[in-house]
Length: 240
Image (cartoon, rainbow, N blue to C red; front, side, top):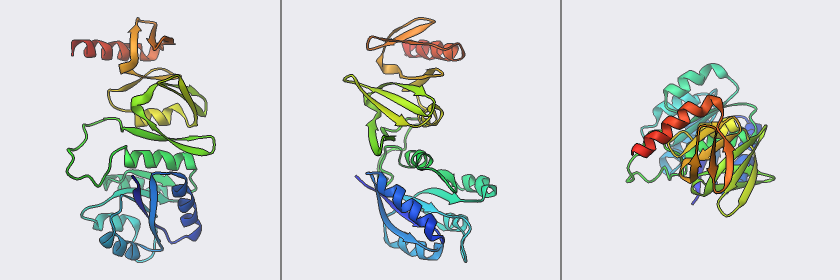
């Protein structure tokens, strides 16, 4: 399925960047790009929009005023060069805040936070449990954007600005991203960071002790900083 996007920005170059980035993500579809918030309001009243990318400082009506005016808002990602509006933006419940100029990797992180593997148009579905992981994430792999089902992930291994994703079936992907970024998106009870270099899918752990754990025959270390939290989590799961 495609998540329908709307761009609102009075700078043509900023629009071009977002158009390019949206086109690189297979599950995103650009509905329209608008030069101002008043034009965007007309689109929002006539089209179903899932993700709204809006600048803040615009003539007549700002991006923040636009967000406040929406009774049933899509996921909102602010794009701006002015960091002083960040707190006000998050008070309005925006999904993310992109500081111009932003990279494709940072854009992808915001998109992952917005779509979260769920269809935001499915209002009949029950609300997700707090701090639950999405069903999938997008990763930049070479020159492609790859959709990865988290149910297939065994563990993730960090290498500086890269993350090696180990999947079921002895498959691996090397994504351009940092472990800290990925960890922010995996905040529920399914995955856990057990070492500065490893995030593990708890369901795939076959055995463990205080120093290490095993995932499908691969032994991974447990870092000192993460040991207490890991042991408490495993004990809680065992007690059910």
